[in-house]
Length: 353
Ligand code: NAD
Image 1 (cartoon, protein in one colour):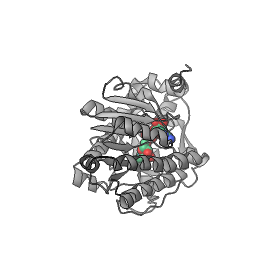
Image 2 (spheres, protein in one colour):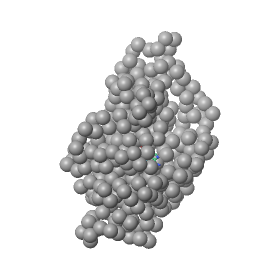
Image 3 (cartoon, rainbow, N blue to C red):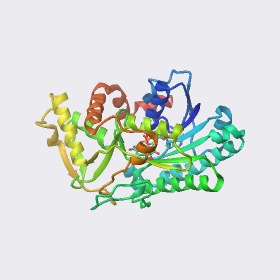
Image 4 (tube, protein in one colour):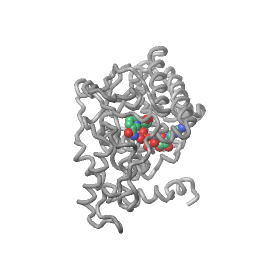
């Protein structure tokens, strides 16, 4: 099979590509616009494989998408390209509307036109897998409820509203045009190659540098955490075995408050890096509470029973094992993140380095 993966230079997309290239015989065409979040260095373990291809393409560009479909003739699309950072969506929602909504629409139309051109057997086997977030469901504050595939949508941020829109478009393209789509909604991911603006890598790298660890509000916001490699395995299972027209929630059964996550990172650093930066007695002394994010959801929690029951997927990592692996990865891969922090990763790929 050949998978067309959008956003494959990002955090989760690169994990999916590493999983497919390293564990299967399938091929991948990665299309990515290489925004600030795209980093081809996250693919260094697989980019010399003859089954891996890359093209710098924006998913809003319909002509380029048409060219990619007719040149590569993919068997399935896995759509991960998106603007993904909630804080950035609050400061500047326009690119979120453009990429997450218009981009998904443009990709759906290109996929539909290609799918219509296929012979019956290939047409039946084709899949369009849309990768989305549990944030579309909104806030579970004050309840013990879990998000199921039937939970109604109530997005709070420009990011989650744009992802909710894209989910609706994908389902409409299935219902109206018959495009064989599947949607997955997943909880917060963490793990290797995560861009340092997100909570877990930000805390690890700030602590190592003796900088404050900024925690929003009282730090009691609860998220369900999933190790990114468990998500990549789930996505591969869904695209190859999932039922067309269905939605699958993916989660790790790891509800943790943000402050718990930050304190766990501090404890691991105490154990793994006993030589603290100058002036720091304990890593947790760096924790600094800052003004809460506007519209901040208090609790997300996923019921992943359907994918476990119907497709036999279960996460392999607990939060304890996954967070240890993650901290160790950042300690052992300083060259990856120092090139992100000093911006040289983007200069090099643009040929200006
Ligand atoms: P990311 O920000 O790390 O990567 C996004 C990638 O998309 C980047 O490589 C970027 O260059 C590319 N991109 C952005 N705009 C593009 C455009 N117009 N055309 C082509 N490429 C473009 O994001 P991520 O964390 O890897 O998330 C991937 C997907 O999974 C997103 O759709 C996100 O909504 C979803 N998701 C993420 C999480 C999470 O915790 N990170 C959880 C659930 C779902």
